[in-house]
Length: 264
Image (cartoon, rainbow, N blue to C red; front, side, top):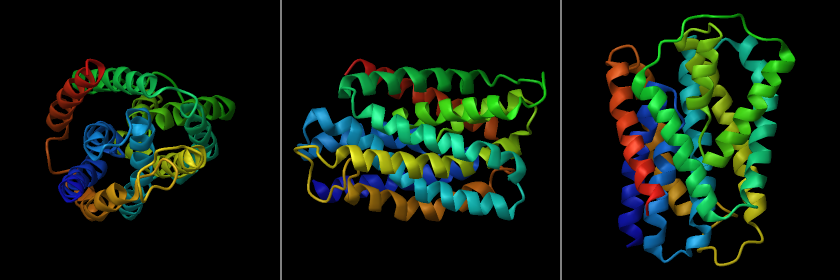
């Protein structure tokens, strides 16, 4: 059973890596529900499945987003002056979000993820074209926005790109640069969120073998091996494939996943 699950995680990593580079997402929208389904097959107690899925998801995103960030940097998609304004606040928010998650029940975490992902997927499905309506806000407003994104992303076990990209495009940042900023910040969200989930899970009981806090290392390894290879491939095809069509298909898939999570 463990071998089959690790194989499934490796396949998930291929999809996650490619979509990370192509759409600018960190992969948590796929990894979290997948692990929430797979981990119980290893007889892992239900009360730690969600935090374990969230922590493992964020830890895998550290590597996936780092690979995608390097590729976006080579393609000059990252406006570093703007990115630096988001980095500290989003990191602190993600660390706080992980610590908050430890205080919540698995059922609450599941519902938070399902509702939030449904909202994000609906936005993606409608493909709302937001025109530039205002300039970027002052630095204090950017700090508040980034801090809030970090908390929400950490509670969902995602990089935060699906939240940050619509916000950046609303303030007139080009889609390509918004993806670059979000991918870079996603690496930090994942790093600090992972630290939080490791710390909060150190005193947890009934964790499976080869766990580091709320990070399940076998699943992590299987995901990152393939995702880190396919992330640059996604970046390469970002300007060649019909991204809007892919977003709609992916959004429909996410809505179905979210509905299933709510009712099971």
